Image (cartoon, rainbow, N blue to C red):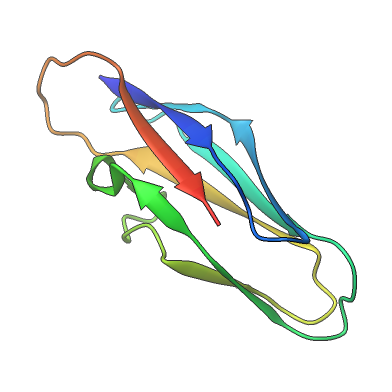
Length: 99
């Protein structure tokens, strides 16, 4: 069916927010934003911790990343997430992310 995206704690100066918190096997995508504050002059690697990552992929089909890099001068990045279509009738599942 689909799932709901939850966000938990983040590292200092970094926020993770849900732009669209639900996805479905029918193709509806969820979206999460990773943003930083402070000095943008250097790149920043943000480690991501997922729960139930086996239920989702990035919209291009690649696995959910364990980290993202915010390039120098870039304050945010967004990720589009897709539910894995397994064809099973199941209740709503949950995918969570923290940094």
